[in-house]
Length: 511
Ligand code: AMP
Ligand code: MG
Image (tube, rainbow, N blue to C red; front, top):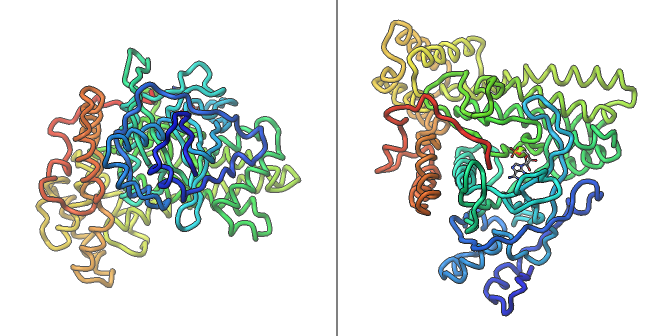
Protein backbone atom coordinates (compact mmCIF):
# COMPACT_ATOMS: atom_id res chain seq x y z
CA UNK A 1 0.00 0.00 0.00
CA UNK A 2 1.32 3.45 -0.78
CA UNK A 3 -0.01 6.78 0.33
CA UNK A 4 -1.47 9.36 -1.97
CA UNK A 5 -1.24 12.70 -0.23
CA UNK A 6 -1.43 14.80 -3.32
CA UNK A 7 1.55 16.54 -1.74
CA UNK A 8 4.86 15.28 -3.07
CA UNK A 9 7.43 14.34 -2.06
CA UNK A 10 6.01 11.73 0.23
CA UNK A 11 7.75 10.39 3.23
CA UNK A 12 9.55 7.29 2.06
CA UNK A 13 9.56 5.92 5.53
CA UNK A 14 5.78 5.92 5.71
CA UNK A 15 5.60 4.36 2.30
CA UNK A 16 7.71 1.43 3.33
CA UNK A 17 5.91 1.11 6.63
CA UNK A 18 2.54 0.71 4.97
CA UNK A 19 3.90 -1.21 2.02
CA UNK A 20 3.41 -4.61 3.62
CA UNK A 21 -0.26 -4.23 4.46
CA UNK A 22 -2.93 -4.62 1.88
CA UNK A 23 -6.48 -3.42 1.93
CA UNK A 24 -9.12 -5.88 1.06
CA UNK A 25 -12.41 -4.23 0.22
CA UNK A 26 -14.84 -7.09 0.53
CA UNK A 27 -17.74 -4.84 1.51
CA UNK A 28 -17.24 -2.72 -1.57
CA UNK A 29 -17.59 -5.85 -3.69
CA UNK A 30 -21.13 -6.34 -2.38
CA UNK A 31 -23.95 -4.89 -4.50
CA UNK A 32 -24.11 -1.13 -4.89
CA UNK A 33 -27.26 -0.74 -2.81
CA UNK A 34 -25.25 -1.78 0.29
CA UNK A 35 -23.29 1.47 0.51
CA UNK A 36 -22.36 4.78 -1.06
CA UNK A 37 -18.79 5.48 -2.05
CA UNK A 38 -17.64 8.40 0.01
CA UNK A 39 -14.25 9.90 0.82
CA UNK A 40 -13.64 11.51 4.17
CA UNK A 41 -13.66 15.29 4.10
CA UNK A 42 -10.18 16.60 5.01
CA UNK A 43 -9.80 18.61 8.20
CA UNK A 44 -7.79 21.73 8.86
CA UNK A 45 -5.13 20.82 11.41
CA UNK A 46 -5.08 17.16 12.35
CA UNK A 47 -3.04 16.25 15.42
CA UNK A 48 -2.46 12.79 16.83
CA UNK A 49 -3.83 12.38 20.35
CA UNK A 50 -3.37 8.70 20.82
CA UNK A 51 -2.18 5.79 18.76
CA UNK A 52 -2.65 2.15 19.66
CA UNK A 53 0.70 0.61 18.77
CA UNK A 54 -0.19 -2.77 20.25
CA UNK A 55 -3.28 -3.01 18.06
CA UNK A 56 -1.34 -1.83 15.01
CA UNK A 57 1.04 -4.73 15.51
CA UNK A 58 -1.83 -7.05 14.77
CA UNK A 59 -1.56 -5.84 11.19
CA UNK A 60 2.17 -6.34 11.08
CA UNK A 61 2.97 -2.64 10.94
CA UNK A 62 5.86 -1.24 12.95
CA UNK A 63 5.22 2.36 13.95
CA UNK A 64 7.98 2.91 16.49
CA UNK A 65 10.26 4.99 14.26
CA UNK A 66 7.60 7.16 12.72
CA UNK A 67 6.09 7.98 16.10
CA UNK A 68 9.45 9.35 17.23
CA UNK A 69 9.47 12.38 14.94
CA UNK A 70 6.88 15.11 14.85
CA UNK A 71 6.87 14.95 11.05
CA UNK A 72 6.04 11.26 11.33
CA UNK A 73 3.29 11.92 13.84
CA UNK A 74 1.83 14.56 11.55
CA UNK A 75 1.75 12.10 8.72
CA UNK A 76 -0.08 9.56 10.84
CA UNK A 77 -2.48 12.27 12.00
CA UNK A 78 -3.16 12.99 8.34
CA UNK A 79 -3.92 9.34 7.66
CA UNK A 80 -6.21 8.96 10.67
CA UNK A 81 -7.99 12.24 10.00
CA UNK A 82 -8.87 11.18 6.47
CA UNK A 83 -6.66 13.84 4.86
CA UNK A 84 -4.40 11.19 3.41
CA UNK A 85 -6.20 8.23 1.92
CA UNK A 86 -4.02 5.15 1.93
CA UNK A 87 -3.69 3.71 -1.55
CA UNK A 88 -5.80 0.60 -1.90
CA UNK A 89 -8.53 1.90 0.39
CA UNK A 90 -12.00 2.28 -1.14
CA UNK A 91 -13.86 4.48 1.36
CA UNK A 92 -17.59 4.01 1.65
CA UNK A 93 -20.54 4.78 3.91
CA UNK A 94 -22.65 1.74 4.81
CA UNK A 95 -26.43 1.74 4.53
CA UNK A 96 -28.52 0.57 7.46
CA UNK A 97 -31.81 1.12 9.24
CA UNK A 98 -32.68 0.64 12.85
CA UNK A 99 -35.18 0.72 15.65
CA UNK A 100 -34.27 3.66 17.85
CA UNK A 101 -35.95 3.47 21.25
CA UNK A 102 -38.48 1.12 19.71
CA UNK A 103 -39.29 3.26 16.66
CA UNK A 104 -38.21 2.20 13.23
CA UNK A 105 -36.06 4.56 11.13
CA UNK A 106 -35.87 3.07 7.64
CA UNK A 107 -32.89 5.19 6.62
CA UNK A 108 -29.95 5.63 8.96
CA UNK A 109 -26.55 4.59 7.61
CA UNK A 110 -23.07 5.91 8.29
CA UNK A 111 -23.86 9.59 8.65
CA UNK A 112 -20.56 10.52 10.22
CA UNK A 113 -18.25 7.65 9.42
CA UNK A 114 -16.60 5.96 6.49
CA UNK A 115 -15.21 2.50 6.15
CA UNK A 116 -11.74 2.87 4.64
CA UNK A 117 -11.65 -0.83 3.87
CA UNK A 118 -10.59 -4.01 5.58
CA UNK A 119 -7.10 -4.99 6.64
CA UNK A 120 -6.00 -8.57 7.10
CA UNK A 121 -4.15 -9.25 10.33
CA UNK A 122 -1.10 -11.46 10.64
CA UNK A 123 -3.41 -14.44 11.26
CA UNK A 124 -5.44 -13.81 8.13
CA UNK A 125 -8.57 -12.34 9.74
CA UNK A 126 -10.20 -9.30 8.13
CA UNK A 127 -10.79 -6.18 10.22
CA UNK A 128 -12.81 -3.12 9.26
CA UNK A 129 -10.92 0.15 9.52
CA UNK A 130 -13.42 2.94 9.99
CA UNK A 131 -12.99 6.66 10.51
CA UNK A 132 -15.68 8.02 12.81
CA UNK A 133 -16.29 11.76 12.59
CA UNK A 134 -14.93 11.98 9.06
CA UNK A 135 -17.51 14.33 7.56
CA UNK A 136 -20.86 14.28 5.82
CA UNK A 137 -22.15 11.40 3.73
CA UNK A 138 -25.43 10.98 1.83
CA UNK A 139 -26.76 9.40 5.05
CA UNK A 140 -26.06 12.46 7.22
CA UNK A 141 -29.58 13.89 7.01
CA UNK A 142 -28.69 17.37 8.21
CA UNK A 143 -25.93 16.30 10.61
CA UNK A 144 -22.44 17.68 10.10
CA UNK A 145 -20.86 14.25 9.92
CA UNK A 146 -18.36 15.24 12.56
CA UNK A 147 -17.61 14.11 16.09
CA UNK A 148 -16.80 16.24 19.05
CA UNK A 149 -13.51 15.43 20.74
CA UNK A 150 -15.09 14.47 24.08
CA UNK A 151 -17.00 11.45 22.75
CA UNK A 152 -13.92 10.37 20.79
CA UNK A 153 -11.90 10.27 24.01
CA UNK A 154 -14.73 8.43 25.79
CA UNK A 155 -15.02 5.75 23.10
CA UNK A 156 -11.26 5.32 22.99
CA UNK A 157 -10.94 4.83 26.75
CA UNK A 158 -14.00 2.66 27.26
CA UNK A 159 -13.63 0.41 24.21
CA UNK A 160 -9.99 -0.32 25.02
CA UNK A 161 -10.88 -0.93 28.68
CA UNK A 162 -13.58 -3.38 27.60
CA UNK A 163 -11.08 -5.23 25.42
CA UNK A 164 -8.69 -5.54 28.36
CA UNK A 165 -11.53 -6.73 30.58
CA UNK A 166 -12.00 -9.52 28.05
CA UNK A 167 -15.26 -8.32 26.49
CA UNK A 168 -15.80 -8.68 22.72
CA UNK A 169 -15.70 -5.14 21.39
CA UNK A 170 -14.73 -2.86 18.57
CA UNK A 171 -11.29 -1.40 19.18
CA UNK A 172 -9.69 2.01 18.87
CA UNK A 173 -6.61 2.39 16.71
CA UNK A 174 -6.13 6.15 16.74
CA UNK A 175 -7.66 9.39 17.94
CA UNK A 176 -6.93 12.75 16.35
CA UNK A 177 -8.10 16.27 17.02
CA UNK A 178 -9.15 18.10 13.87
CA UNK A 179 -8.32 21.72 14.65
CA UNK A 180 -11.90 22.51 13.64
CA UNK A 181 -14.94 23.30 15.75
CA UNK A 182 -18.13 21.29 15.64
CA UNK A 183 -21.35 22.92 16.70
CA UNK A 184 -23.59 21.19 19.20
CA UNK A 185 -25.15 23.43 21.84
CA UNK A 186 -22.16 25.67 21.18
CA UNK A 187 -18.77 25.23 19.50
CA UNK A 188 -16.72 22.23 20.61
CA UNK A 189 -13.34 20.95 19.45
CA UNK A 190 -13.66 18.21 16.84
CA UNK A 191 -12.09 14.76 16.81
CA UNK A 192 -11.92 11.61 14.72
CA UNK A 193 -11.69 8.06 16.00
CA UNK A 194 -10.26 5.21 13.96
CA UNK A 195 -12.38 2.22 14.87
CA UNK A 196 -11.39 -1.37 14.21
CA UNK A 197 -14.14 -4.00 14.14
CA UNK A 198 -14.57 -7.59 13.05
CA UNK A 199 -17.23 -5.92 10.93
CA UNK A 200 -19.74 -3.10 11.21
CA UNK A 201 -22.77 -5.07 10.03
CA UNK A 202 -25.64 -4.52 12.42
CA UNK A 203 -29.09 -5.94 13.06
CA UNK A 204 -30.18 -2.70 11.38
CA UNK A 205 -28.25 -3.59 8.22
CA UNK A 206 -30.54 -6.60 7.75
CA UNK A 207 -33.54 -4.44 8.54
CA UNK A 208 -32.50 -1.99 5.82
CA UNK A 209 -33.07 -4.57 3.09
CA UNK A 210 -35.90 -6.50 4.75
CA UNK A 211 -37.95 -3.33 5.24
CA UNK A 212 -37.61 -2.64 1.52
CA UNK A 213 -38.75 -6.14 0.67
CA UNK A 214 -35.34 -6.80 -0.89
CA UNK A 215 -34.93 -10.44 0.07
CA UNK A 216 -32.17 -11.00 -2.45
CA UNK A 217 -30.00 -8.50 -0.59
CA UNK A 218 -30.94 -9.98 2.79
CA UNK A 219 -29.66 -13.32 1.54
CA UNK A 220 -26.48 -11.76 0.13
CA UNK A 221 -25.79 -10.05 3.44
CA UNK A 222 -26.49 -13.26 5.37
CA UNK A 223 -24.10 -15.18 3.11
CA UNK A 224 -21.48 -12.49 3.62
CA UNK A 225 -21.85 -12.69 7.40
CA UNK A 226 -21.66 -16.48 7.38
CA UNK A 227 -18.54 -16.31 5.27
CA UNK A 228 -16.92 -13.68 7.47
CA UNK A 229 -17.96 -14.65 11.00
CA UNK A 230 -19.79 -17.97 11.08
CA UNK A 231 -18.23 -20.23 8.43
CA UNK A 232 -19.34 -23.32 10.40
CA UNK A 233 -22.98 -22.37 9.70
CA UNK A 234 -22.47 -22.91 5.97
CA UNK A 235 -22.52 -26.69 6.41
CA UNK A 236 -25.84 -26.73 8.30
CA UNK A 237 -29.06 -27.96 6.72
CA UNK A 238 -30.35 -24.39 6.85
CA UNK A 239 -27.33 -22.08 7.20
CA UNK A 240 -29.54 -19.06 7.96
CA UNK A 241 -31.17 -20.67 10.96
CA UNK A 242 -27.72 -21.62 12.12
CA UNK A 243 -26.51 -18.06 11.56
CA UNK A 244 -29.39 -16.68 13.60
CA UNK A 245 -28.80 -19.12 16.46
CA UNK A 246 -25.10 -18.29 16.46
CA UNK A 247 -25.75 -14.54 16.58
CA UNK A 248 -28.20 -15.07 19.45
CA UNK A 249 -25.60 -17.10 21.33
CA UNK A 250 -22.95 -14.41 20.94
CA UNK A 251 -25.30 -11.58 21.89
CA UNK A 252 -26.58 -13.45 24.91
CA UNK A 253 -23.06 -14.13 26.16
CA UNK A 254 -22.04 -10.55 25.42
CA UNK A 255 -24.85 -8.87 27.32
CA UNK A 256 -24.42 -11.30 30.23
CA UNK A 257 -20.76 -10.33 30.35
CA UNK A 258 -21.62 -6.62 30.28
CA UNK A 259 -23.91 -7.12 33.23
CA UNK A 260 -21.33 -9.09 35.17
CA UNK A 261 -19.11 -6.00 34.97
CA UNK A 262 -21.79 -3.42 35.74
CA UNK A 263 -21.68 -2.05 32.20
CA UNK A 264 -24.62 -0.16 30.74
CA UNK A 265 -24.51 0.29 26.98
CA UNK A 266 -27.07 3.07 27.11
CA UNK A 267 -28.42 2.95 23.58
CA UNK A 268 -29.15 -0.61 22.51
CA UNK A 269 -30.94 0.39 19.32
CA UNK A 270 -30.93 -2.27 16.62
CA UNK A 271 -28.44 -0.20 14.62
CA UNK A 272 -26.07 -0.46 17.59
CA UNK A 273 -26.07 -4.24 17.79
CA UNK A 274 -23.55 -6.10 15.68
CA UNK A 275 -23.88 -9.43 13.93
CA UNK A 276 -20.29 -10.26 14.91
CA UNK A 277 -21.18 -10.12 18.62
CA UNK A 278 -18.90 -7.18 19.39
CA UNK A 279 -19.93 -4.29 21.60
CA UNK A 280 -20.33 -1.26 19.34
CA UNK A 281 -21.14 2.46 19.53
CA UNK A 282 -19.90 3.74 22.83
CA UNK A 283 -22.13 6.79 23.10
CA UNK A 284 -23.87 7.25 26.41
CA UNK A 285 -22.41 4.07 27.90
CA UNK A 286 -21.21 3.98 31.50
CA UNK A 287 -20.29 1.61 34.31
CA UNK A 288 -22.35 1.88 37.45
CA UNK A 289 -20.65 2.47 40.76
CA UNK A 290 -23.22 1.47 43.36
CA UNK A 291 -25.49 -1.37 42.42
CA UNK A 292 -28.99 -0.44 41.29
CA UNK A 293 -30.60 -2.40 38.47
CA UNK A 294 -32.68 0.61 37.40
CA UNK A 295 -29.56 2.67 36.69
CA UNK A 296 -29.78 4.81 33.55
CA UNK A 297 -27.19 7.44 32.67
CA UNK A 298 -28.25 8.42 29.17
CA UNK A 299 -29.89 11.83 29.02
CA UNK A 300 -32.24 10.72 26.25
CA UNK A 301 -33.38 7.47 27.86
CA UNK A 302 -36.26 9.02 29.75
CA UNK A 303 -38.25 5.82 30.17
CA UNK A 304 -35.31 3.70 31.28
CA UNK A 305 -35.68 1.40 28.27
CA UNK A 306 -31.94 0.70 28.28
CA UNK A 307 -31.48 0.57 32.07
CA UNK A 308 -28.83 -1.82 33.43
CA UNK A 309 -31.32 -4.48 34.42
CA UNK A 310 -33.28 -4.37 31.14
CA UNK A 311 -30.41 -5.22 28.86
CA UNK A 312 -31.15 -8.93 28.55
CA UNK A 313 -34.76 -8.28 27.56
CA UNK A 314 -33.72 -5.63 25.06
CA UNK A 315 -31.21 -7.98 23.49
CA UNK A 316 -34.06 -10.45 23.01
CA UNK A 317 -36.25 -7.73 21.50
CA UNK A 318 -33.46 -6.86 19.08
CA UNK A 319 -33.01 -10.52 18.18
CA UNK A 320 -36.72 -10.63 17.34
CA UNK A 321 -36.15 -7.78 14.87
CA UNK A 322 -33.30 -9.73 13.31
CA UNK A 323 -35.49 -12.84 13.08
CA UNK A 324 -38.20 -10.83 11.31
CA UNK A 325 -35.67 -9.69 8.76
CA UNK A 326 -34.54 -13.26 8.11
CA UNK A 327 -37.99 -14.90 7.96
CA UNK A 328 -38.03 -15.85 4.26
CA UNK A 329 -34.66 -17.53 4.73
CA UNK A 330 -35.89 -19.63 7.64
CA UNK A 331 -38.66 -21.25 5.61
CA UNK A 332 -40.32 -20.36 2.29
CA UNK A 333 -43.69 -21.10 3.87
CA UNK A 334 -44.36 -18.01 5.94
CA UNK A 335 -46.41 -19.56 8.76
CA UNK A 336 -43.73 -22.11 9.37
CA UNK A 337 -41.04 -19.42 9.27
CA UNK A 338 -42.90 -17.31 11.84
CA UNK A 339 -43.48 -20.28 14.16
CA UNK A 340 -39.82 -21.22 13.99
CA UNK A 341 -38.66 -17.64 14.59
CA UNK A 342 -40.99 -17.30 17.56
CA UNK A 343 -39.68 -20.48 19.08
CA UNK A 344 -36.05 -19.45 18.65
CA UNK A 345 -36.57 -15.94 19.99
CA UNK A 346 -38.52 -17.27 22.98
CA UNK A 347 -35.60 -19.56 23.76
CA UNK A 348 -33.35 -16.52 24.06
CA UNK A 349 -34.75 -15.90 27.55
CA UNK A 350 -33.49 -19.26 28.83
CA UNK A 351 -30.23 -18.88 26.95
CA UNK A 352 -29.61 -15.48 28.49
CA UNK A 353 -30.63 -16.67 31.93
CA UNK A 354 -28.02 -19.41 31.71
CA UNK A 355 -25.32 -17.07 30.42
CA UNK A 356 -26.11 -14.52 33.09
CA UNK A 357 -26.05 -17.14 35.80
CA UNK A 358 -22.77 -18.59 34.65
CA UNK A 359 -21.17 -15.14 34.43
CA UNK A 360 -22.40 -14.27 37.91
CA UNK A 361 -21.62 -17.60 39.55
CA UNK A 362 -18.09 -17.37 38.15
CA UNK A 363 -17.81 -14.09 40.05
CA UNK A 364 -18.58 -16.05 43.22
CA UNK A 365 -15.89 -18.60 42.43
CA UNK A 366 -18.09 -21.43 41.14
CA UNK A 367 -17.30 -23.44 38.04
CA UNK A 368 -20.62 -25.20 37.53
CA UNK A 369 -24.05 -23.81 38.22
CA UNK A 370 -26.02 -25.53 40.98
CA UNK A 371 -29.78 -25.09 41.44
CA UNK A 372 -29.52 -22.84 44.50
CA UNK A 373 -26.88 -20.58 43.03
CA UNK A 374 -29.49 -18.28 41.58
CA UNK A 375 -30.71 -17.48 45.10
CA UNK A 376 -27.17 -16.92 46.27
CA UNK A 377 -26.65 -14.35 43.51
CA UNK A 378 -29.96 -12.61 44.00
CA UNK A 379 -29.48 -12.47 47.78
CA UNK A 380 -26.10 -10.83 47.37
CA UNK A 381 -27.49 -8.36 44.84
CA UNK A 382 -30.37 -7.54 47.18
CA UNK A 383 -27.91 -6.84 49.97
CA UNK A 384 -25.81 -4.70 47.65
CA UNK A 385 -28.86 -2.76 46.59
CA UNK A 386 -30.02 -2.18 50.15
CA UNK A 387 -26.58 -1.01 51.30
CA UNK A 388 -25.76 0.98 48.12
CA UNK A 389 -22.66 -1.17 47.76
CA UNK A 390 -20.17 -0.49 44.99
CA UNK A 391 -20.66 -3.20 42.36
CA UNK A 392 -17.01 -3.63 41.38
CA UNK A 393 -15.55 -3.34 44.87
CA UNK A 394 -18.04 -5.78 46.39
CA UNK A 395 -17.14 -8.55 43.96
CA UNK A 396 -13.46 -7.73 44.24
CA UNK A 397 -13.68 -8.07 48.02
CA UNK A 398 -14.62 -11.75 47.67
CA UNK A 399 -11.02 -12.68 46.93
CA UNK A 400 -9.98 -11.53 50.42
CA UNK A 401 -13.17 -12.87 51.98
CA UNK A 402 -12.52 -16.36 50.70
CA UNK A 403 -9.37 -16.39 52.81
CA UNK A 404 -11.28 -15.20 55.87
CA UNK A 405 -10.58 -11.47 55.56
CA UNK A 406 -14.12 -10.16 55.43
CA UNK A 407 -13.53 -6.51 56.35
CA UNK A 408 -13.86 -5.23 52.81
CA UNK A 409 -16.90 -7.35 52.03
CA UNK A 410 -18.72 -6.20 55.15
CA UNK A 411 -17.49 -2.69 54.46
CA UNK A 412 -19.62 -2.88 51.34
CA UNK A 413 -22.68 -4.88 52.32
CA UNK A 414 -22.72 -4.25 56.08
CA UNK A 415 -22.54 -6.85 58.79
CA UNK A 416 -26.25 -7.43 59.27
CA UNK A 417 -27.64 -10.87 60.06
CA UNK A 418 -28.50 -11.23 56.36
CA UNK A 419 -24.96 -10.37 55.34
CA UNK A 420 -23.44 -12.83 57.79
CA UNK A 421 -25.92 -15.50 56.68
CA UNK A 422 -25.08 -14.85 53.06
CA UNK A 423 -21.41 -15.25 53.74
CA UNK A 424 -22.06 -18.54 55.54
CA UNK A 425 -24.18 -19.84 52.65
CA UNK A 426 -21.51 -18.80 50.17
CA UNK A 427 -18.81 -20.46 52.26
CA UNK A 428 -20.62 -23.77 52.44
CA UNK A 429 -21.42 -23.63 48.72
CA UNK A 430 -17.70 -23.12 48.03
CA UNK A 431 -17.04 -26.49 49.68
CA UNK A 432 -18.67 -28.13 46.65
CA UNK A 433 -15.90 -26.70 44.49
CA UNK A 434 -12.98 -29.04 44.45
CA UNK A 435 -10.49 -26.25 44.99
CA UNK A 436 -8.28 -24.98 47.79
CA UNK A 437 -8.16 -21.37 48.95
CA UNK A 438 -5.30 -20.48 46.62
CA UNK A 439 -7.13 -21.81 43.59
CA UNK A 440 -10.36 -20.09 44.62
CA UNK A 441 -8.53 -16.80 45.08
CA UNK A 442 -7.05 -17.13 41.63
CA UNK A 443 -10.46 -17.77 40.09
CA UNK A 444 -12.02 -14.79 41.83
CA UNK A 445 -9.06 -12.60 40.93
CA UNK A 446 -9.39 -13.42 37.25
CA UNK A 447 -13.04 -12.41 36.88
CA UNK A 448 -13.57 -9.59 39.37
CA UNK A 449 -11.68 -6.53 38.15
CA UNK A 450 -10.13 -3.95 40.43
CA UNK A 451 -10.25 -1.15 37.86
CA UNK A 452 -13.10 -0.20 35.55
CA UNK A 453 -13.46 3.07 33.63
CA UNK A 454 -15.38 4.84 36.36
CA UNK A 455 -17.46 7.77 35.20
CA UNK A 456 -15.71 10.45 37.23
CA UNK A 457 -12.30 9.30 35.94
CA UNK A 458 -13.47 9.21 32.33
CA UNK A 459 -15.00 12.67 32.74
CA UNK A 460 -11.75 14.04 34.19
CA UNK A 461 -9.77 12.64 31.28
CA UNK A 462 -12.25 14.10 28.78
CA UNK A 463 -12.31 17.51 30.48
CA UNK A 464 -8.51 17.78 30.50
CA UNK A 465 -8.39 16.87 26.81
CA UNK A 466 -11.22 19.09 25.67
CA UNK A 467 -10.49 22.12 27.83
CA UNK A 468 -6.70 22.13 27.89
CA UNK A 469 -5.58 19.68 25.19
CA UNK A 470 -3.94 17.84 28.04
CA UNK A 471 -4.06 14.12 27.35
CA UNK A 472 -1.97 13.09 30.36
CA UNK A 473 -4.99 11.99 32.37
CA UNK A 474 -6.29 9.95 29.46
CA UNK A 475 -2.87 8.34 29.10
CA UNK A 476 -2.61 7.52 32.79
CA UNK A 477 -6.16 6.16 32.99
CA UNK A 478 -5.58 3.96 29.98
CA UNK A 479 -2.38 2.61 31.48
CA UNK A 480 -4.20 1.61 34.67
CA UNK A 481 -7.11 0.12 32.71
CA UNK A 482 -4.77 -1.91 30.54
CA UNK A 483 -4.40 -4.35 33.46
CA UNK A 484 -7.79 -4.21 35.13
CA UNK A 485 -7.32 -7.31 37.26
CA UNK A 486 -3.87 -6.45 38.69
CA UNK A 487 -3.31 -4.10 41.62
CA UNK A 488 -0.96 -1.33 40.54
CA UNK A 489 1.08 0.72 42.91
CA UNK A 490 -0.02 4.33 43.10
CA UNK A 491 -3.31 3.58 41.36
CA UNK A 492 -5.40 3.23 44.52
CA UNK A 493 -7.59 6.19 43.56
CA UNK A 494 -8.58 4.49 40.33
CA UNK A 495 -10.17 1.57 42.18
CA UNK A 496 -12.72 3.50 44.17
CA UNK A 497 -15.91 5.40 43.42
CA UNK A 498 -15.86 9.19 43.78
CA UNK A 499 -16.15 10.47 47.34
CA UNK A 500 -19.42 12.14 46.51
CA UNK A 501 -21.32 10.36 43.78
CA UNK A 502 -23.11 12.69 41.41
CA UNK A 503 -26.75 11.64 41.65
CA UNK A 504 -27.48 13.48 38.41
CA UNK A 505 -24.64 12.01 36.35
CA UNK A 506 -25.72 11.98 32.72
CA UNK A 507 -24.17 10.84 29.50
CA UNK A 508 -24.96 12.14 26.05
CA UNK A 509 -25.26 10.68 22.58
CA UNK A 510 -24.00 13.85 20.95
CA UNK A 511 -21.04 12.44 19.09
P1 AMP B 1 -25.67 6.64 16.87
O1 AMP B 1 -26.22 7.51 17.94
O2 AMP B 1 -24.18 6.64 16.84
O3 AMP B 1 -26.21 5.26 16.90
O4 AMP B 1 -26.12 7.29 15.51
C1 AMP B 1 -27.41 7.18 14.97
C2 AMP B 1 -27.45 7.72 13.56
O5 AMP B 1 -27.25 9.14 13.53
C3 AMP B 1 -26.42 7.13 12.63
O6 AMP B 1 -27.02 6.91 11.40
C4 AMP B 1 -25.37 8.22 12.54
O7 AMP B 1 -24.66 8.14 11.33
C5 AMP B 1 -26.21 9.47 12.64
N1 AMP B 1 -25.44 10.60 13.19
C6 AMP B 1 -25.11 10.80 14.47
N2 AMP B 1 -24.38 11.92 14.62
C7 AMP B 1 -24.26 12.47 13.39
C8 AMP B 1 -23.63 13.65 12.86
N3 AMP B 1 -22.94 14.47 13.64
N4 AMP B 1 -23.72 13.86 11.54
C9 AMP B 1 -24.40 13.02 10.75
N5 AMP B 1 -25.01 11.92 11.17
C10 AMP B 1 -24.95 11.62 12.48
MG1 MG C 1 -25.13 3.88 16.00
